Image 1: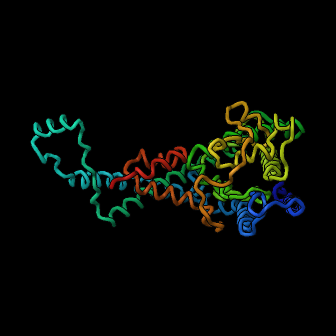
Image 2: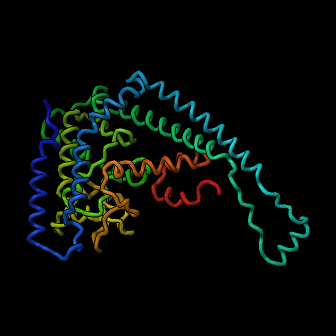
Image 3: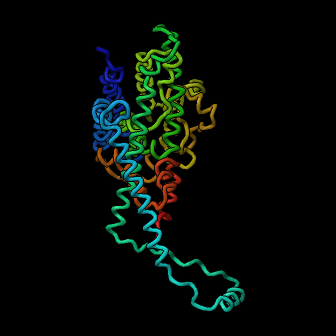
Length: 385
């Protein structure tokens, strides 16, 4: 039976956290001045989500395989639900526009020639009349629910089908290449995984769909080794650059899994404030200093330093930032909870609310696919009065 490297490393994770806690006790600071200190509720939340992330792939397989096109018997049913709810949502769009537009107040309160003179004298132009949505609240909620169902089912079908089509086993079976199981093959797997990880990690900050999954890892306002274990549980329902591409290059699926484990284990030790600068190492490798920047909500630190093992990718592709000011950890708008369920679902719930309130397919898909910043800026202006 194959052993997951991340599971095998659990005793080392626990020992390292104990050592970090002991270091903090021997290097005390004023209460509340070091964000790396352990706080019980925060640590419990991180550890519980770490356990959840280990179980999630097995649970997801049982839940998602039946609704995957070409793999499960319910894939076509989910596709039909998506198509039906999309059609009904479109009909609802037309009805709501007609109800709203039909309720516009008549702007012709004075003759046109008189109004033109008035505006010219006042050197102003009247603002267009406010559009008021007079759709009954019940119909509005039904319409929003249909929109959420259409977007969610389409996204689920797309992500599960994409994952099945690009799996390492499937692509390796189609590849004429085979690098074997030697050291060079493992090195190719680790470097290849690290390169693909950089782009997936970067996309996780640039697309709200992926951010809904990844924001879990950024939700803590503290930064210690337990934060490394605060991992997402919904990675099976996103679109990513497939690691199965390594299989096309001849890397065997077993080595791809080993590369995944090595990558995750490396990321553990960089979640600490106990280690400061590491000199020349920081030119090539990701370090605690570099990764503290990545977890910062400071304006200059947002969406920087996406690398895992190597920081070279950030230097090459323009996303590198040095640590030069104290880091403020957490989200740009913190959720103030230690409840693992709320931590895991808060962004998904916000997306659903935005999709339900949107009035066009362009906005609905934009709320899911465009950057989180676009959605947050758009939300107050979305919809009608």
